[in-house]
Image (cartoon, rainbow, N blue to C red; front, side, top):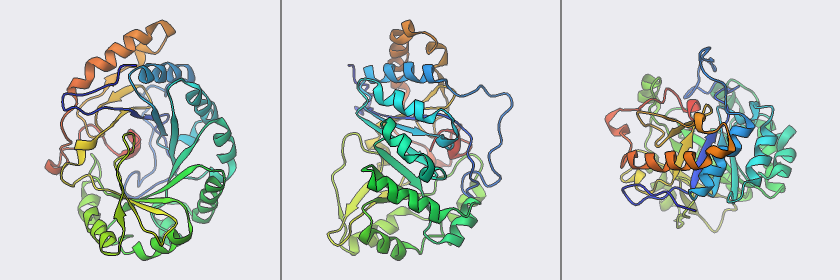
Length: 326
């Protein structure tokens, strides 16, 4: 195993792999008009290509994998993907991010295949607001699936994008929920992408403001694990659940970066908001190419920037978060 390290001393044990760009929700901050396929785009990686990709990354020290989309449950072979990923030597933690629309139907199969952690997008606990945000009146069914995931023993987190004037006043409702639900709720600061500038200007609110409210209420910050995501997690003795804050506009946010991304068509992205993708698909066609794949990935890591350029309004080649799995 040869752990990847960039020129700033950061290591990358965490890979986020998109398996499909499509999504069946119409979230106002991501795909307000629904997913529109590019007729000229290549199809997503096959199961065999995914297996080779993961074998290459584990040789470079990857031990945590998160499956993303779009919406990954739209892949009919998702259970096979999870089973294959879980069987790759070196993958110690297999997670997935989903909108939860198929949780109640497919969770048992996913868990049996090896999934042990799941993040579900739930921006609000208000059913009317949820339907307005996503285009789907599915909140109660999704929360039922969340409860089932907890019962199955999965690590469960709910993702809520903070939106000024939409859900930024709902912390009391979330805290009531966390008193009795052993899940994490991660509040994510809205990020500017290539096609949401007007929306961003209307609804962006700094996550650090919410973080201060938590500290004032007695929540305590936890140490960050080496393979953890970007959230700063908080714990309170009176609550069963935890709170995470993802504040990409905060000082030194990128200093703890530990993850790389691969798009559904096999492009390596060194940063969610990077200016380029590095095509890997040609190196995923035969088992004998794994050595070449490892060399290619290792040879590109030096191009990773010290930080993103969101403060300058530069969003790279990311048109919306569904395009690279967020």
